[in-house]
Length: 260
Image 1: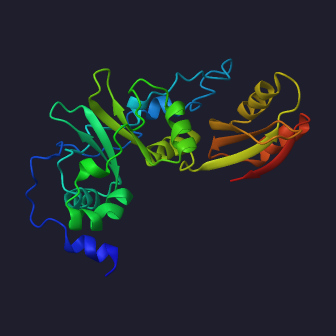
Image 2 (image 1 turned 90 degrees about the horizontal axis):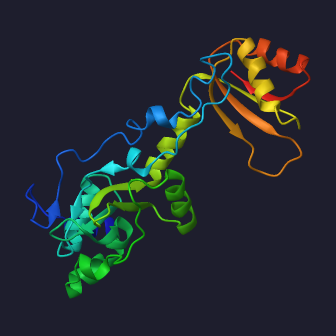
Image 3 (image 1 turned 180 degrees about the vertical axis):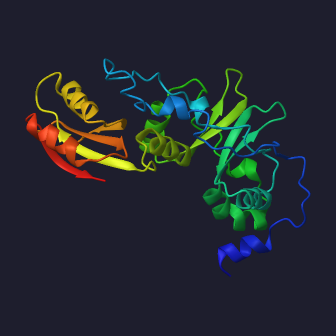
């Protein structure tokens, strides 16, 4: 029998949940809504002609995390943990004690792998959970969380306060949403890739040319790979792109590509 069919066959019937499952009233939220103003680092970059760069404060984990996440007890059955994650379209659950302090971390994949042994031998979440998971503080820098998730190849991290109590969860999806929001990838606009040259003020000069042609910057990306060119990717609000490209070229800048 396929595992998914087996899982469905062992899901707990009915709507009732045991006391081993904590279900907050507001389970989900838009992971980027609270940090949207902070995250869009360069939106409004040219609100004043004399201002070219707006320094962004470090984005904190608390601005992206899912607050008051669903949690379970270590006495929760493996079947119930699987059902809970499938029902709520989530892949991770913090395991907490009676004081809501973190005692472990489980993933849907681990629970599915442990389902058959659990049915046969009576294993519980306590036997399968990660007992000392990586955690983040809500005031930690989001970049730190992203680096850990990337390097450790994990899907999410529980967020705990100074007392070790679970206050949130931050996942790959939350970080991706933040990246999309910061870069304005879903905003209807144009993109111009420019070699800003070797001069220290090359970025400022290119920005001034764009501004003078009526361009309003949403975000700026920089090529991370090693190259002999200093390529910046300017994403702008929708506007005529040809005058901007011509003005940049007239000022001696190489326009690598543009769209919009």
